[in-house]
Image (cartoon, rainbow, N blue to C red; front, side, top):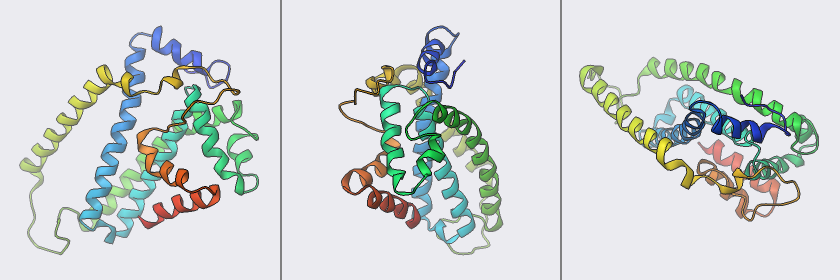
Length: 243
C-alpha cells in the first residue's frame, strides 16, 4: 500500500504499479478519474453561466465550494507520488504563500516540502472528498428548492417529466463518458503523463519545465504572466471571486 514517507513514497507507488494485482489499473483509473471530474466540472460551470444559474446564490456558492475543494484535493494528490514534477510543482505553489507570515510552515510543517507535508497531504487528500460529497448533497438540496431545469430562467408552470426521456439521456451520457474513461485509463494515459514524474525526487535538479496538470493551467497562466508572486496570487483569487 502507499506509504506517506519521503523515503518510501515513490517506491510504494511503483510497488503498487508493478507488484499488486491490477494495481496499475487502479492507479491509472484514479488519475484519469480526476481528469474527468474536472472536465465535467468545467462543463457544468459553463452550463451554469450560460443559463444564468448564478442568480441562484445558494446553489452557486455551494458549487464553487465543491470546485475549490476539488482543486485543493487534486493538488495534494499530485504531490503524493513524490516524483520530480510532484515535488517541484508543490514547491512552486507553496512558495507563493510566503507573503503571509507563518502560513507555509503551518501548511507544510516546515520551511520546505518535506516528510510532514507528505503525511498531511495524504490525510487531507483522503478526507476532502468526503467533505465535498457532503456539500454535493447540500448543493442538490438547494437546487431542488427552486428547480434548475428551465434554461430560459423564468418561472413557468410547465414541468418536464424526468422519466423516461431525461433519464434515458442521462444514461446515454453516462455510458459515453464511461467508454471514453475506460479507453483513456487502459490505453491512453501514459502518452499524456509527465516523464519527469517517473523519476524519484532530486532536490538539487530542477525539471526543464515545471508543468501542472491541464486542469490547473488557467490558474498557472495567471501566476506565470504576472512577475510579482503576491499580485499573481491575488489575481487568481479574484478570478475565483468573479465566479
